[in-house]
Length: 165
Image (cartoon, rainbow, N blue to C red):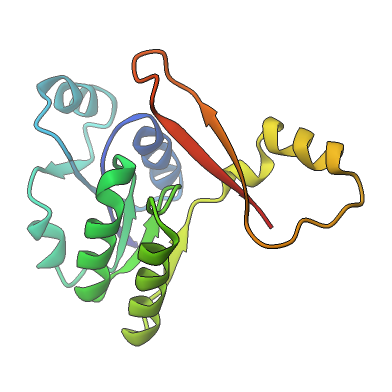
């Protein structure tokens, strides 16, 4: 059975947890913030899943070779870098970082360490992006294009960057 660490248990973290448990993976959840409500939810819904508040528990466990990071975007670069350096295979929920420079650093580091590094890509199939592609028709998008949307009433300045290839 594969052992996977999941960092973060917000909306996307819960989706990843559901899928990982369906794959019969042994999951160690690292609760990114010290929320007793999140801990309670985890115990009630996934009593078989171990959890910790210490990311070092993942770094120091040689049997944990894969890490899924589903935390706020501002933490992605630091966490991904830390786990790549620890020799883990890393999947980061999108957006990977807030700059292409930092993203390139992570790719380079993963190549140097011969580690697998992957970024979530579900927005490639998002209705909004499909409509943009439809509107562009056969026109080829060159370079990096960006669609910026605001998704949150509580955080009106929050935005997601969607890249077209």
